[in-house]
Image 1: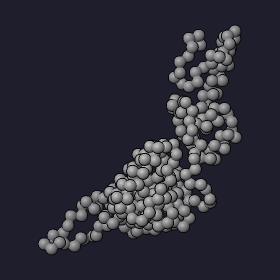
Image 2 (image 1 turned 45 degrees about the vertical axis):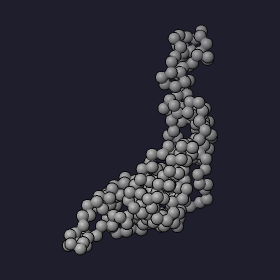
Image 3 (image 1 turned 30 degrees about the vertical axis):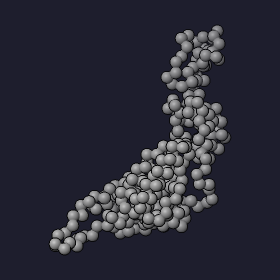
Image 4 (image 1 turned 60 degrees about the vertical axis):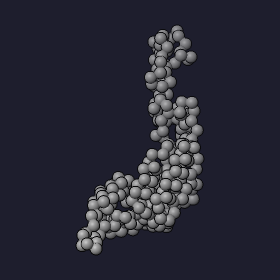
Length: 264
């Protein structure tokens, strides 16, 4: 998907609807969102940030050109570890157009000064979300927004807007090896860890397999290796206690919480 130009309310709603539709059709494949946007109203940007954080799959974001104010916030709202910038991207941290508060707003025809509390509240909300996504202090973010600080790709990486600068050719949205699951919710990486196949584990991790995914028993791939070790130890112990019994077809439970035969 592409977020280009100004982030207008109608455009934000369209992108949000497409994100929800794609996630509903396939919740295991990342959505790639390319961003080259000068931003827009605060509410449109925050609504899109909320949708990105609530869809059922990860949204990988890529800065492809000039990205500023709310466009930058959408970039930072991508899934952790999957926020990218191309080498020649330019990022500008500045106040959104509807939150650019002057020190002393001009009076109206009757000589009354407008109440700018709403704009100040919106500005702080943007700063809070930005600080959360970058790991910076809110006061630092506010100061940089007022100064309209500009970042190159590497500077954006150091600040915390992105997790990686794309320096080499790599396919966007490549089907992850975690997409296919077995009946217990296990992935190929679960099977490789359980089998003790180190080369398969390394190959799957190199392809982007997620070692933090859990199967329906709550086990991550590395934990299945520990389960296999525990199973082996229990079989050995069972053979010592009751050497006359054949334990190969009984065995310990495959996962914690599974029922055991009475004689075991």
